[in-house]
Image 1 (tube, rainbow over the protein chains, first blue to last red):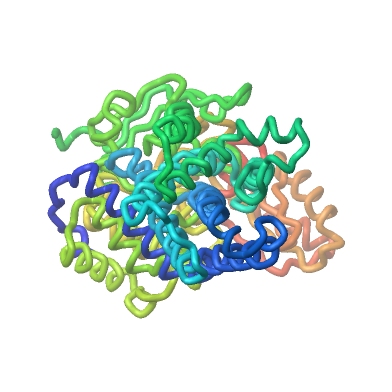
Image 2 (cartoon, each protein chain N blue to C red):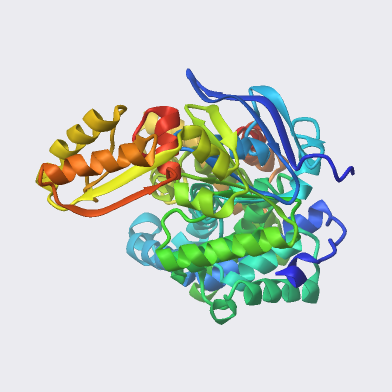
Length: 262
Length: 315
């Protein structure tokens, strides 16, 4: 015990170094929670294949035609659903008292959240990469080429970043991870299904179409399609960014306030 | 920093939750290098008090200094001097024991190999080397608590806060945690622990503050607290539980005062001012034909001290 306690303290690490440690923790989680990785890999594969082959013929004449419209949309849907993990993880950490330890350390107080963001980005890139690969195998062609795809993925990460705050706030407010998921999905499902991701709004009743056309999910999906097809306009990108930006501006300060208040 | 400054010095700390005054004006002075126990029943305000001192809660009133740093104006300096092991193991269950410690070592600024070496030394010291690569969710309660304490020693804190360090542990694990706490104190770390166990405070602490309803109701060495309660205590265990009430009535009649009961053990305890009084009371029990499984005369246990201070049965 004496040799243990006679340790000289290392110099205090930087905020960036703190954040990277939490990022490393997020990566370790992939290793230790393979169920999560399975979920992360299988769900997008399943959704892409099912929707393309089951609905493709009916909705767009052929699976191939449908995929061309659907693929950018399933990317948006997957990233939004995957944002739940951060909130659930946060809720678990708070419930277990782990955040008490972090908060009693002399570290940059927001670094645990930066770590959650690192985990999110990795999840979005993995899921997005898988979906794009399947799409390419099935015949999807992003007409805008590599730069279009890179632009679309930048948009995708922005969407994930914005959605992530919603679940982080839920994670800070709710002590049971499953409830975070249930409440989050209750809001998320109508937003995602009542959008232009799967079905052309032209076939919907007028009242629903009115909602679908202003639904931020539709706006983001249209921008994704535009970016990957090379037809995106600045207006399209601008309106797609309203929701992620707005959410971040409102929920990031709320997150900090909730965290400090705990 | 002046070595004579108390490790923890609190004046009039208050924390309210709505109408409840969870901590209601507590003063505390914990000298450096001491094991100091905060003793009280569930809901007395022990954890709230400790969370304030560990910068996790803002006091509503009062002030405190930890290792000479003000809690509210210099929380970061306080955090650099403390470590806290909460009531529930504050570890990442998905990671291995080693990964948990490496993560914390990195957060304190150890890099690469130094962080891994530090983690390995901690694991070895706390007898966890064999479980280093197991996920924490597969640890037993005792292993978890040891890892949790190890996690508080990544750098040596000036003050170590231990919130109910042995709650929920089996007797063997409990003894091993006690021995670690003693060794730590031996190497110069100030330890402030909360407990609802009388024997734990008695075994470990040099000083005890007894807390109830958010207020400090007594403070002193274990011995002082026992002396303050009264001189001799007569303990008797009645062989036939059905005659417990009868025995209690007899003792009260002979000795005055009131009997403290522990019905599960069939034992009764009461203040006896002199050995002569105790002798007379035992005689009365024998004359009534009440068979005793055990009897003893001694100083009060801390449980009895607590009863005497609060007028309540054991916490």
